[in-house]
Length: 341
Figure 1 (tube, one colour):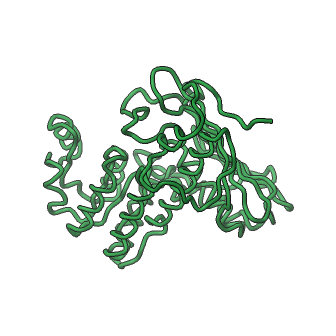
Figure 2: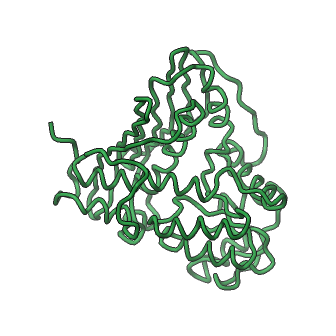
């Protein structure tokens, strides 16, 4: 719905909607003066297709649509396994990079401004990004088929922001990751995750992602360097401070301000412009694969009681995050995995 609303806000008609049921497709289509279709009828006359199916469908759906001639906005997470990620990267390369990995926060003004200011605070000494909220009451996010829980689905947002901030500071890619996961009641997935990325410089970056954060969401980021501190509030309100002083952010007066504040409109506009110019999006399939490298290594680390796992991930390429978590010692689903003293 957010992507369709962004398209309408940008003046791009939504020509077709497919969903898991004809009733759901018709419901969404009627909201946007569109036509309900089946999956195999896409792309039809569309130039861009948003793939927001469950993660286990991402690789097949996106590759088919790219091969059919459409540009693709592929919702996060990119996919479930490295094997699928490699297929997506190869397919995007065959089609001039016409796939955008749907990390909308990379296009959010508060995040972009923070990234731009990172060089002003000097070499980093601290980096933490968090996304804390309640467990979704809809969807199949905690099913085995989904592939992973709070870290795999929600956690890719703060993880991507952390990677972008570290890169802006000249840190390059992380060289290792360690993680702990905590499960929930009635399922075998993770509801709370804490991971640490280690960089060659010695910097350690922290990412916390939780569906046990209560009813009010809290997403934020903090970066400290030898010359200053940056703090950003992302959800529920947005603000940015440099050394305690407020940094001006754009004001949006559109009917749905959150589409601009969280980057949905800019994300779609970027894909349309990049596809027309034959450019690969900044948020490419390659970047999505980099995020997945960290995620898979983190689940493997959690299964090994928090032991550090080197990056890039070189484990089994056909296993999902949950399967990697379960490679470790037997555990209770509600137990917090911590490093042994």
